[in-house]
Image (cartoon, rainbow, N blue to C red):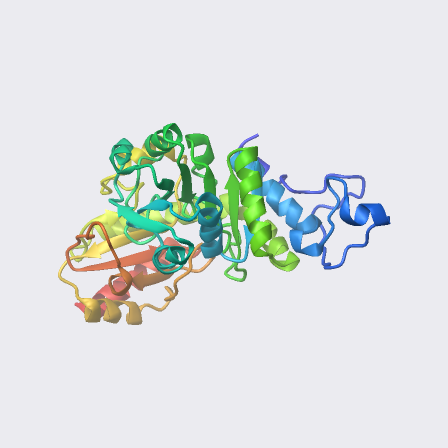
Length: 382
């Protein structure tokens, strides 16, 4: 079956009850049928509600099968999905290589929290491939990817990096929120852990915070699960249900968002105010060839350069918009825009762009209305 069909079927009961959706199962205490099974419980029996009941299991199964992995851990946010992946992969005395374009809160975790565990981080240029081998020393334990980066949209050569890492015994992790595990299959390209914010395209309605990590094989999954349970991570059943609900319509929403984004990107490209269009599916993008090779589709998140603009000009543009909202999430039904320059941080390389960088997240609105809104914003600047 194609993924569009699988999204409607994965994680469903498919039993004699005829129930289309799994129930929302809430529970903390789980009673043992005997004193012996209180401690020696058989596989498949949940001994405590923190590990999740059938609602959680339905979502885990759906995400695992979509990605083609061995198992899934659920977290309370996309940030925690990334941090759990890191914690499962490294130990004291180790070092992490991270793409210099990674999500800001993950960068903060690597620089402020991981040193307390005796783990250092080195950032590498975000347009890197097999040459990363030159950076892998004996103390490197994990490589953290984000392709495309969530603000500046650079891409790494995922299969090339994964192949080098496996040869050297290094775990690879990717934040694949942009693709939602639907239009890119990082585990099939050799990555070990695929982390994402279910808050975005899977949830799809801007009303749930959640994350997930899918492991490539059983050994990696056991390592991930042991870390998840030792830290006491837990997610609520209602959030799992909402994520599973959004999962069903994700392909349709992403296809619409992507198509509208390309229409808007082409329109912006025709405007004299804009510079490069930083959407990997757009010919303007310097890594367009990697996108065509590895992705089967795209999403509605992209950035645009506005040469000659400063932060006050960006603020006038954003404040004049009436349909686009201003917010740091994306993947919901509403379109969003933010100016990126106040939060751009780099360690290894500077992101060079002329003027201002503005990121757009395209939702479900008619692209004609969004274009009219952008014209309103451009007029406010000129």
